[in-house]
Length: 258
Image 1 (tube, rainbow, N blue to C red):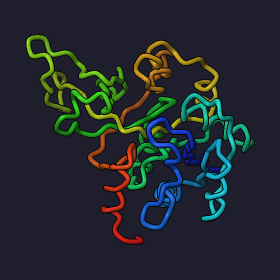
Image 2 (image 1 turned 135 degrees about the horizontal axis):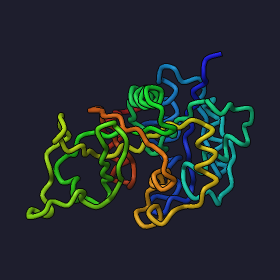
Image 3 (image 1 turned 90 degrees about the vertical axis):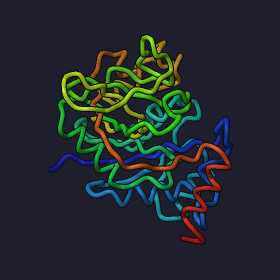
């Protein structure tokens, strides 16, 4: 049988900056439904689940025909929540591909999901993610996570800081990514992940590392364990909803009752 591909959307109610975010109305549908529909439209995805700690979110998912998997409130990250959800689901083989689809990406291009799965399958790495070109102002923005990768396409580091440091030109955004041995492989990290399920279980069992806690970036746990994270490059863009102002802009882009 072919290796199954499962997409999971971690969705918690108690967001610090925007409580109840998964249930906000976006042109007639709750945001969690918008994200679910985008993930479901990706070719090659066998099933889509919402991993949540909130009964209201689970009820909303059931209302539009999806399936929610309940998880403990105490899950520290989306990775941990997805691992807990799959334990509850049961019967998932270790070689299954699991895609972590961020629950605040209602405009996510389905091709991004297909792309991160292709990156994982095209390498021997147990985990994959995506990067895109840095936009104006993003190099110095701590909310814009930067990623550096090596000649093999494997992540070297993720940071909220403007990395790498340019000696003699601090704070200057570098050009890139480029080609050739002298190229600087730098991009804006796209928070979409694919894992082999066996590795995901091991990642969730590991304690958050010091780098992860300092940067607030869960993907650093994999690097701290000495594991490889493959980075695929894309020019596709999405639009995350972090604030009510972001939600208003997404409503404008979606149009009336789309």
